[in-house]
Image 1 (cartoon, rainbow, N blue to C red):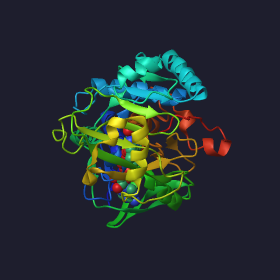
Image 2 (image 1 turned 90 degrees about the vertical axis):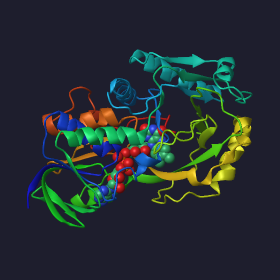
Image 3 (image 1 turned 90 degrees about the horizontal axis):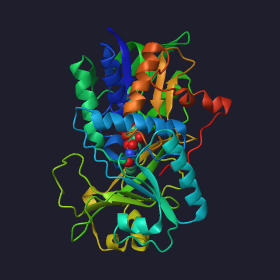
Image 4 (image 1 turned 45 degrees about the vertical axis):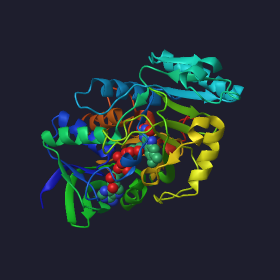
Length: 392
Ligand SMILES: Cc1cc2nc3c(=O)[nH]c(=O)nc-3n(C[C@H](O)[C@H](O)[C@H](O)COP(=O)(O)OP(=O)(O)OC[C@H]3O[C@@H](n4cnc5c(N)ncnc54)[C@H](O)[C@@H]3O)c2cc1C
C-alpha cells in the first residue's frame, strides 16, 4: 500500500487548517481522514462563531491576534464581522480581573479593547439589566464573529487545490507504532501507512492517542445553545455579550449552513455552561436546558424573555477540554506523532495560528512565527500548566 507522507486524523476546522498550512509550505502528500460522510459534523459545526482577543494568558492573546489578522486579510469569505465582545462583571474581583486582562492585552498589541463603565455598557447593549453590573471590558474593533463552517471550507478547498486529499467515511481505529515511531493507522477500510500522523480529532482525540500509548488529557464536555426568535428586530450591530461570573451569553444568531437565511435581525442565540464539568460524549439537545437558560435571560436581558424558541435550531456539541483549558500543539515521545487538539472551546478562533504552528513544528521542528512551546503535551508531566479563567 502507498505510504502517505502526512496523515491528518479529523476533518474539522483544525485538521483543515493543518492541511492548508502544510500544503502552503509545499507539502504535497497530505491526506485527511474523516469518519463522517462530510466535514463539519463534529464541534466545528456546533460552534457559536465567536472570535476574540480578550483572554488572560499571553499565548491565547497572541494566538488570537494572529488569527484575527488572518481572518481580516484572508481572500476567502469566512464571514468575519468585528462587531465586538462585551464582558461584564458583577463584582469588584471580576472587574479587577478584566482590568488586569485589558492591561495585558494592550501591552501585547490588542488595540480596540477598553474598560467600560455601567453607563457605557447600557449604551452598547440596549435593554440590558445593568443593576448589578459594576463594569466590563469591550473589544470593539477586532473581536466579533466568524462562520466556523466557512473557515473550515476555506482551509479545505485551498489545501485540496494544492494537492491535499480528503477521505470521508473513514474511521480511524488505532494509530500504529513500531520501535517508538509512528508507522500508520488502522481504519474501518484497511491499513494506511504514514510517515507522520497528526491527531486533530477534537473531543474524540484521547481514545485514539491511547492506542499509541499516549495519555492525552482531552475530555469531552457537552455544551448547549438555544436559538430563539423575537417578534421585532433586535438592536442592530449587537455584539457578543457575556456575563463573566455565570458564563451566560448571547449573540445575534447566524445560520452558518445557509448564511442568507434568518437575516431579518430577529434571531438570537443564548447559552450558559450547564455541564458542571462533567465528561460526556452526548450531543443530544436536552429540552430541560430551555427553561434554565430563559431564567437567566429574564434577569439579564428582559427583551430575550419574550422570544420564541426555534426548537429545530437549538443544538448541543462538545467542548474538548484540557485540564488548563489550553490547546495541546506539538509532538510526543512517539516519533512523528503530533497533536493539535484540546482547544477547550476556542478552536475555531485559534484555527489559523494553530494550523500554522502545527505545520511549522512538523516541517521545521518548531513554530517560528510564534513560540507555542508552552502548549506542548509535556506541560502536564512537568506541571507547567497555564492559567486562564475567561473560558466561557
Ligand atoms: C456549543 C459550542 C460553542 C462553541 N463556540 C465557539 C466559539 O464561539 N468560538 C470558537 O473558537 N470555538 C467555539 N467552540 C469550540 C470549537 O467548536 C472547537 O474548538 C473546534 O471546532 C475544534 O475543531 P476540531 O477540528 O479540533 O474538532 P471537530 O470539529 O470536532 O473535528 C474533529 C473531527 O474528527 C473526526 N473524528 C473523530 N474521531 C475520528 C476517528 N476516529 N477517525 C476519523 N475521524 C474522526 C470527527 O468526525 C470530526 O469531524 C464551540 C464549541 C461548542 C460545542
